Amino acid sequence: MPEGHTIHRLAQDCAARFGGAPVRVGSPQGRFADSAALLDGALLRTADAHGKHLFLGFGAAASGDWVHIHLGLFGKVNFGAVPAPAPAPTVRLRLENDTAHMDLRGPTACALVNDAEKDAIHARLGPDPLRADADPDAAFRRISRSRTSVAALLMDQKVVAGVGNVYRAEVLFRHGIDPRRPGRDLDRAEWDAIWADLVDLMREGVRNNRIDTVRPEHTPEAMGRPPRVDDHGGEVYVYRRAGRPCHLCGGEIRTAELAARNLFWCPACQRT
Image (cartoon, rainbow, N blue to C red):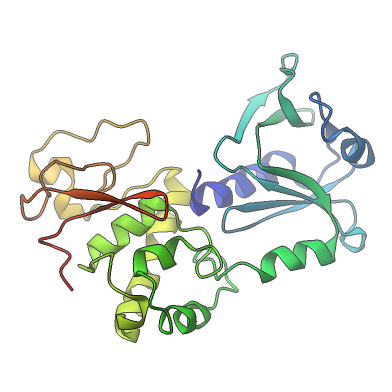
């Protein structure tokens, strides 16, 4: 499932390609056809993201027309030039103007919502490190009262929105924190450092459209090691490196299942 930086990048890309002008809206698959007909020819006035949720705002600001998109495990977005090829029958939503088109396939959610419904989605999500209105205090209040592991809490979108399996594994490694430690054992200074790091790492993810988490002194060039070969791209410390040597201590990276997701960590480097 795409992590939050991908959704914020999608919001930027949608705004850059379609913002401020009328957009042709269609649903070749048909599952969004009624809503697409209502929006066809409307102005795309803004694109917003919160965690793994994308919102495209159409029409006048007072109209409250938002397309809410959650990609889930299988959703894909593709951009292209015009003239656009004939859409595949699996395309749930197509946006098109005189210079670009966008196709959405396989999302968990693609629905037309109003302001109140959009606000309700925001209300159930935790603070997003990529949003200017994020309140890290709200996340810490929940974490500091919980016996649940900090690894599970970071993946809980009601606690922190947008963090997925890669960012949670990497940020805990970068701060030497055992992912199995209960949230209530995390002190405020540790949380502040984790939050600041997530802000920086995820902003970099938006800029580069990929996740890189290794510090400059641990890049392949600096260490004289081969670059990572993985379809997810990016240089990482522990994610999907189970059984391989840690870049810092040389010990074996471990993996275990936690809340139906694979957890990765270095037992030697993450002891606190």
